[in-house]
Length: 351
Length: 217
Image (cartoon, each protein chain N blue to C red):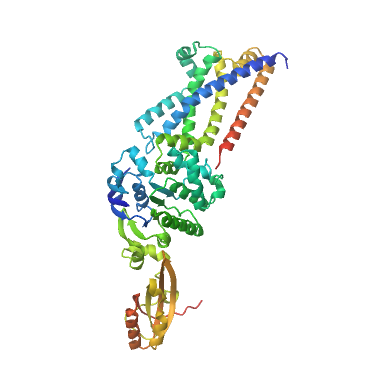
C-alpha cells in the first residue's frame, strides 16, 4: 500500500545542510497498522509528512496505492491526498467551525452538494460517538472528543490510508486507550491502512502489527511488534521497551553482586518470558513438583501485545546444585524464553 | 450652549462618518488581500514567493512611514486625479484611504499569523487549494482578530479625518479648528470633543461586541 524507497530529507540550516532522513526504506502492506517510534528529533514527523508530501523528500520515491507522489504536479497531488487522511497531535480543528462543519470541511473542499455531505457526515459522527455534539464548537470539547472529530474528518473523504502524527500524545492515558481502540476498530471495519507515529511504546504495543524504530534519520530496527518486543536488537529499542517492562532486579538484589558461579546462600535468578499459548503453561508448578527445589517469584507481569498474551517472570531458585541444573534443563525444554541472570544473595533491607 | 451649533455639529458629524466609512471600505477591500498576500507569500507558505513578499513589505513600510499630514499634501496631484478636486470631503477620502491601506494590511497580517500553521497543514493534507485555504481557513479563523484590529483602524481614521479638515475636508476636526479655535468658541470645541468621544466609544464597543461574537475559541 505504501512504499518508501531511499527517502532522504535535508533541511537548509543556518550552519549548512541538516539531514533529517538518511535513506529510509519502508514497505507497509494494505490493512496493516504500522507504528514508527522514535525520540523527538529522530525524524519521525518528517517521515510521516513525506508520505502525503507535506514535506517533499530531497530524494527518493513515495508510492502510495501504486502512485508515485514524488512525480506529481500540485493538482494531481491534491487529488492523491484525498486518499490519505491525517490526524494530528494538536487536532488542528477549525475553531470557528462547529463539529459538523469540521467533519464536512474536506467534503466542501471537494465541492460536494450539501445534502450529500449530510449523508456522509452524520454516520461519521455516529461512528466516533459525537452525534450529540454536532453543533458545538471545538473549544467546548475535551481532548479526546477533539481527536474523535479529527478522526471523523480524516475519514470523510474515504481514504485508504490514515496517518496519525502523535495523535494521542496530548491525551491522558484513559483517553489514549479509547482513541487507540477507535483507530483499531476503524482499521478492522474499513480495512484502512494505518501509519502511527509515536514516542510511546505503549501505543505500539496496544495496536500495531509492525513497528519500525527510527533513530537519527535511519530505521535501525523493524519487524512484527511481537518479534521486536521479545528479541529487541538495538539499544534504543531496548530502552523503549524497558519503559513498559522493567529489566531491573527487585530492590533486594539491586546492589547484590551477581556471580555466574553458585556460592553459599545464593539463589539462581532466572527471567522467563512466556508468549501466546505458553503463557497458559503451568511451568512453575511443574518445576516445584518435579524437583526438590525452592522457587520464589521475585517479579512478574502479564500483558498483551495487541492480542497476544505476553508474560514475564523473574524467579529465584535455591536447592542442591544438581537439582537446580536439572530444573534449568527442564525449563529449556519448555516453550519459553529463558534468560539466565546469575547467582546472587538476597540483601535484607532495614528500613 | 448656543442653540445654533447643533446643525453645525450634525453636518460635521455626518461628514466625518462619510469620510471614515467610505475610506475604510475602500481601504479594507484593498488592504485585506494585501495582508493575505503578506502572509501567504512568505517563506514556507502556501504561495511562497519571497522576492514579491519583500517588495510588498517595503512598499507598505514606505507608505506607513509618511506622517498623514504630509501624505495628504504630497499626494494632492493624485487626489485631484481621483476625486477631481483637492479640497472638500470627497477629496479627503483619497489620502485617508491611501493611509489606511498599509495600516489594514499590517493588522490583517498580524491576525492571520496567529492562525496556527497546523490548521493550514491539515487543510493541505485534505487536498485544499491555496485559495480554499485562504477563504476557508485563514479568513474565518482570523476573523475575530481582524475585526478587533479593524476597529483600531476605524478609530485611527476618525483621528486622521480631523486632520483632513485642515485642507478643507470638513467634518468634526474642521469644525473644531474653524469655530472652536479660530473663532474662540469654547462651546463648539467642547461639543466637538464630546461628540468625538461618544463616536470613538461607540466604534470600540461595537467592534469588541462583534469580535467577541465571532470568537468561538
